[in-house]
Image (cartoon, rainbow, N blue to C red):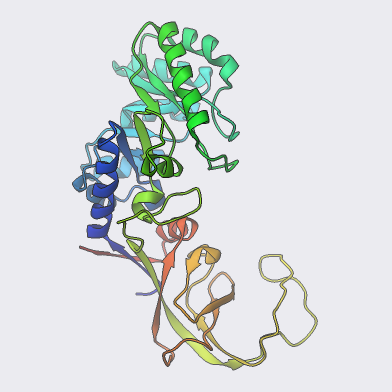
Amino acid sequence: MFPKLIIDLKKLEDNSRLLANLCFAENIEPVGVTKVTCGDPKVARAMMAGGIRMLAESRIENARRLREAGIDAPLLLLRLPMHSQADAVVELFQCSLNSELSTIRALDAAAAKAGVVHEIILMVDLGDLREGILPGQLEEMVLEIAELKNIRLLGLGTNLTCYGGVIPTWDNLGQLLEYNRKAEKLYSHLLPVISGGNSSSLPLLLEAHLPPVTQLRLGESIVLGRETVNRQPIPGAHRDCFQIQAEIIEIRKKPSVPIGKIGQDAFGGTPVFEDRGIHLRAILALGRQDVVVDGLETPEGIDILGASSDHLLLDVTKYPKSLAVGDVLTFTPGYGALLAAMTSAFVTKEYRQ
């Protein structure tokens, strides 16, 4: 059935092993992030087969899917917990990222009720302006956390490049190490975890210029084989662990500019067209309900013209091979396209070893 997402588990295992070994050589614990695959157990097992020992998720539903499939690796909750899900967080996750004292207190109460100690990493905002306390709030937060009997502070973490696009550097991650040392004195215990960001920290690691953080949260680098500062390939990594296939449902020569007065399209935008003259145009049974169209890497000689919810329009004039209705084209997804394809119930998932 098409559209189809092909998932190469062996290549995922290879990428996991490559990145795990890079991290282990620098005493860094790599955490495999499965959220882009909606907590797919087969993907999680491929990561673990490659040496990943801890997994990370952002949603309760995905974590429960992993647990129900028998995945027993420690789980880290990436998205800040909701008060309403405190009991489930304590049940499913060994550790969570946090920045709000009221939420940490809710987790403490849930952990006390469950008779366990829940571990947390306190997030510090180093300038990307997503989650995290400001450095001036560190002392107050750590002292308050120290009073909670069912919460164990493991250390500090940060998130970069996801919202503000702020690039990890020796200087800003070095600040995180300084804050962690300060927190240790306030907490009166060693804080072994310095969670130094995500796949955007890998260029520093590859250049031997990464401060001595102890944890990296790796998602895109494993699943797509690239870092997330400039989306450059990681040497030795597979970039085609995932491929999207779609079937041609119409192909014919047509004008490149619509005929008539232009209004809004199906999504409320006003389209602008480049006059390419008469061109060979293919329509595929793939649309915005299935993928983020802008995130598709096309075969050589094919340009994406646009898409509606169910149709993808391509200029195939320069494609070197003859095409016909019923033929299948293969695309490499970017992160957004992969996320949408994994989430869509209309995209068939096919696993390969």
